[in-house]
Amino acid sequence: MSKLKAHRKTIFSGYVASGLFSSKQFHKVGARFSILLALLCGCDKGSMAGLADFQKPACASELGCMGEEELLVTHAPLSFDTHGGMQTVSIHLLGDWQIEPVSYAWMTAARTDASTLTVTVDTNYSGVAREGEIILQELAGNKKGAVPIAQAFDNALFLGATTEMGRRLVYNSDGLVSAVTADKQYALHERVLVLEISYNGDVNGENQPVSLFLADVTLEGGTTLRMTTAHDEDSSIKRTDAETTDIQTVREQLAAMQNKRSSQLDVLAGVNADFFEIGKSNLLRGVMYREGLCLKDTFVDTSRRVFALTKDGKAHILQQPQYNAMDKSHLWEAVSGFALLLSDGKMVAGHSKDIPPRTAVGVSREGNRVFLLVVDGALVNNKDKEEHSVGATYFMLAKMLLAMGAHEALNLDGGGSSTFAVKKSTDMPSTADSFETRNRPSGGAERAVANGIAIVQLKNEE
Image (cartoon, rainbow, N blue to C red; front, side):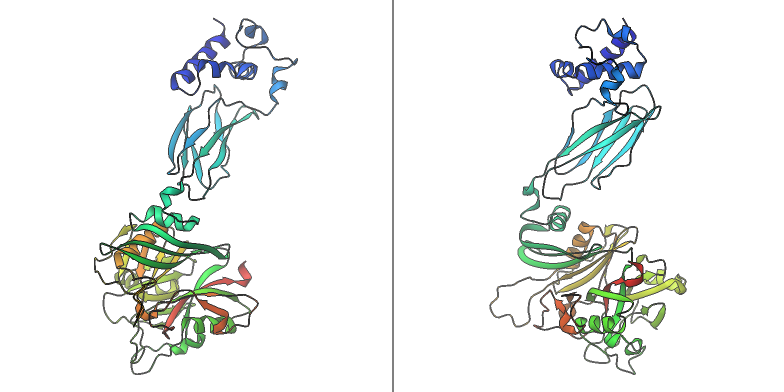
């Protein structure tokens, strides 16, 4: 048997046995596959003469028929369902090969060994079926070939969500959502995406309405966070209750920062932050830093934690022992919170059944993404009893943030303080009215608070 025929028989048998091709389908590959085998096994034209079931190429040069830089990879498309997953492909090449950089964010490819390609595809939140390909290159030459990839989309898995972020929340929140009633996704910047979603789902064992507002912030290219104070003044924060800490609404604090730092940054959005002694001295219950300056360095008790940005631009959730032991010269921005929700990717939230309005912050494993979350709660003196949102437990907050990609998470001040505000337009004068409160504060109006977290875009780093 000729060298080519033996090699062809081996590959033919492998593909038919694997179910990738029937005998009839395999023969349709025809002259192009014969040429591929000739190239790979080094056969000459004479070796091809006895192959009656493959038609000879009509041109003078077999290589020319294929194109000098084309490598035919004979494989049916790899098909994935909406869930995604991993599949392997056997690569039948005699020479060494490599994978070209994959240009699709939803798939990865790896060479497992000399004859195996492993393809991993993410869950499809996009809203449509999608296609792509993995390009392989033979190292001995410039010949290339493609392994086609196809993924289905089934919207039934997402319980009525119409946006990519909404689908991600539903799919990954472990049964939290039973039906989405409305969802909206928009961008405040290419690195700042916002989800507003209302759904019915499990709240303390009952099916109840919940509405939440979440900003997904990627910390790069000058997109970062700054801690806000009343009038954007460091002096508004007091270290003891012997003096009164100044307070303003979140929108007023955002507007003050924009006015005072207009040459340095654009303020895009913000939420409230630390608990404070409301109606008394307004003293913060934890520590606070702004641009490396410590404004308050004590906690009211040992149950407080810290959300911080270090000078390298990374975000962190710190428990008190970690905070106490660290070199404080590395801190750039910091506020405090109370209950730890996620630690090392695991839910550690308590199982309290209390469901007030909530504000929380989550951080990705790498510290380069931050998630700011507000969940609305029941309105005070709500007479019509038709709840827009009943609130959330700590456990629900943990599920929400974990579903969106957080690895660490911390509960911030909630109740009537919970506020999620975004800038209406960059063309408007910077007043409180240039920012819009997207959630419904439970007191019927915004509460003045001691500090907050602003999402900003630095102008000298875009």
